[in-house]
Image 1 (tube, rainbow, N blue to C red):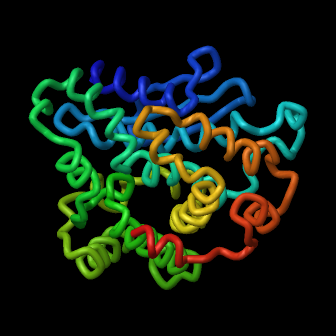
Image 2 (spheres, rainbow, N blue to C red; image 1 turned 45 degrees about the horizontal axis):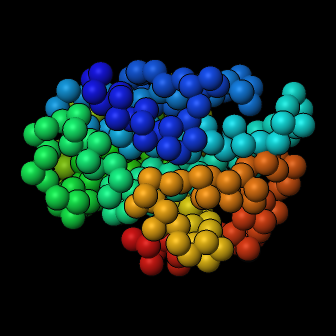
Length: 286
């Protein structure tokens, strides 16, 4: 775990993590929070036999942190000092976790460092590692799902939220309905509630309706990436060198600094060039 944390911190620092204003702590379920623009708190979880959850969970939460940290300081202590919407917020976490974090270019830089921390990976070349962290394989856990099957986890939850609220499904029926849908949608048999209906903290926190924002965020992240790449075509080459500041500052200028000054649609137009959520860039990316 100590070596995982060290690698995660090294990656996050390249993204923009600053130890004078940021924290990274362990938790059961990854989340990001902040009490001010200069107090960004990230959490991730570690498994002794799998490094992917800590790596990509940390990158995901760092995307949230970069958004909050990038809001213009003159908006501090006002109602505008937040992200424009949950969907826009998740576009940032999904962008840094997946489009950046699971890309070949970033691992040109990161893989040697990971191999130094974990010598058992030294024989693994970049292409093999890239394919491994992008492997499409249905599983039980949403936050550890590959990008292709991820949205099915969200659809399942959104359907159940609607059924809970309408009364079509009683709360005590949720585990049974959940397990049946996981089998139907992903072809897996859920072994227990910890890997099933109880894996997320959202419903117990009252975040009913939150889950669709992850899919909205994934779609919007591809729209934003397309725009950023058009503005700076050599971003992938920069990632190979371990340089992520250009992308971070482009996002800060075009999105983060505005906070909640504009509606979500107005915000989307500023950063993606359109106020419409367009699925095509995401489909092409996948």
